[in-house]
Length: 519
Image 1 (cartoon, rainbow, N blue to C red):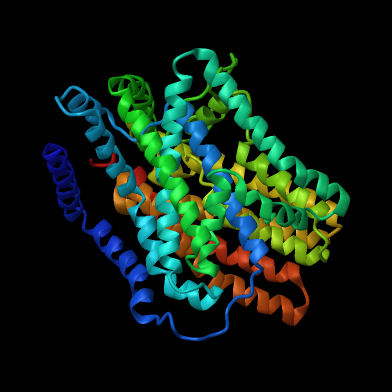
Image 2 (cartoon, rainbow, N blue to C red):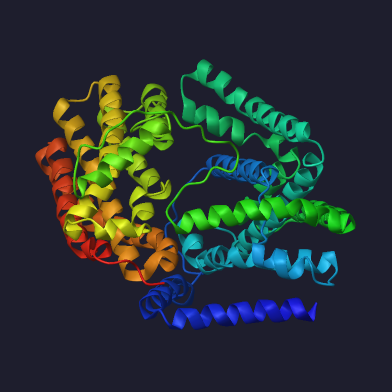
């Protein structure tokens, strides 16, 4: 066990040394750490102030939906062979004379380390959340314990199911079908209730906050544990913690007794994870669940210079069977249509609400950028064109994607809600320009921090940009719309400011396409 502790200590030390060689990334991490820690140091949890009134049923339904989604995604990915080991662990540890249980503990430590920042954030933001939402004393510990247990239980249960399903090929098929069937059965009451009430939001809250759901093993238990942020740690929560610990211990013992059997099976999953990791570093998407079938497409390159990059990207999309409609676009469009049909609000308020929600989802539903794959291929730097033209050609497909996404979402919703045409057009423009801001801000982050730290920091930078847009763009635009009564004018002003940000980020990020990145 001492050898594994040495590896963990050495890995941490090497990561810190590598970070010292990247001063820009180090300074950014320090600033982010200060932003997380300062509210905890200067905010008094006992300070009394007005709290945001949120119904307990709404919070209970949010926790239930979050836990359900996280658990199902984790189990499905585990059945596909996901693991928290890397090929370096396989080559070094799986062949070493070390007990299988110790290697499993080593894997758990690495798994928890990747979630440490999230747990730390939950704990440090407790004073703020207590003042805003009226959390009970000790709610920070409840969140940390619940999240840590959720990660452990999901990982262990997923490994048990993977070990069971991998023994026979047909088992994985039936286990997945059973999981999908249970999910459909779980969602079905919401659909029935929606047909009766014609209100999808009330139907979701009514079902997911149902008191009987707390008896569902693991998922229902975690919902009640998370509700401890309001009730505090009581006997019921302690019982649910104990039940989850029993399941985690039993699963750990089961895997421990498998000895080499589990680790022989997990090698395939580790190889898949390694392929996914390498693909992510190169800006490529990899699907480990299905084989991608490519269509035979007759095409002839007619564009020259930097535009050949754009033509190549279009050809790749045609080979995959769809052109400019990613899955995210379809999901957002369907969600917006359902909200427009079933939500009983004023048309203009609902239109603005959908714009805000769609913008937020665009922030968190990050797609693999095509330009990241292009800059990993050195031929792009040999094309006789200026870096600015190559940047435009590499990002043009994504710009078209965002624009089509905005047209579909707000064009269809505008027709359903019968909103004025200027408001629809301005909403499309605002949504598209915000998406383009995110595209070119990612290029700026990649140029500043490189591909490793840039991949980590891009979401923080997006949040920072979105906060600036809300403060200096959305707020003045909302004031202008209220004063003039012209919503189209206010939305158009925000789109115009977004255009200024786009030009600024394009100017800063052009250098990324000038010469290959250094490792």
